[in-house]
Image (cartoon, rainbow, N blue to C red; front, side, top):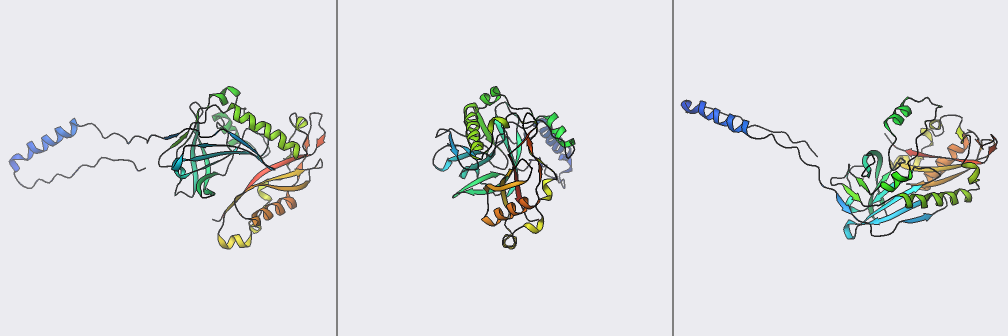
Length: 318
């Protein structure tokens, strides 16, 4: 939306010199007496009520919390995918009302009314035939605090910043999800309290870990999680980009999970989510299995145990 600026017409005085002073004076009087142009008000959001209950989808590599809002041409689908035990999830919002011509960027997201607005990276995509905002990063219902963000910015390569968990009371206080930029008209989804839906997602994740062969109870008291020995940005090289996709100019977002043995060596690679064909999946798993090595997870007694590691790869052309 462009800013509005006042514009004054030029005054040309070419005749009637006797009237010029009074003419100019009257114009100044009128101009000084008029209020300054008001800034354009932000458009009111499109408010959509839920038209389905919350649903939890148990898949092999992720848990998905989903709900429908609105009806007809204003139907919106909200999905929150979680790939492991964490407060974080990946958002996908689909429907005609979130259609945008912006290919990628940062979107304004707020779990209101009390949580801070946050900016999340998104890609323009599709869910079936519906346009969608596919968020490429992970989100919580609230961003880290200013102090936590500063600590993250100033941390060393091997330092880990602890982010304070979001309390149940804050989860209960959520009433809506508001999506602003890049939409021309904001959309507000009336989610209601997020406590029960997020608790259902936690239960799904516990079952998911069990299916992976992970000891859930021992993992709740780890003294150390799986830690890469080298920076993950060294695992995949530009030459790993699939040639057939390179010629087509296709980007991709791939989420993967590695099964890590007690020795810190990856035993298997699993694709948890992908936006592109299998060639990307093969490239990711082939590269990380060859290059990734870890310090293994340790239980509360300091003993190594089988665990897992998760991350995302974004293939993009300059």
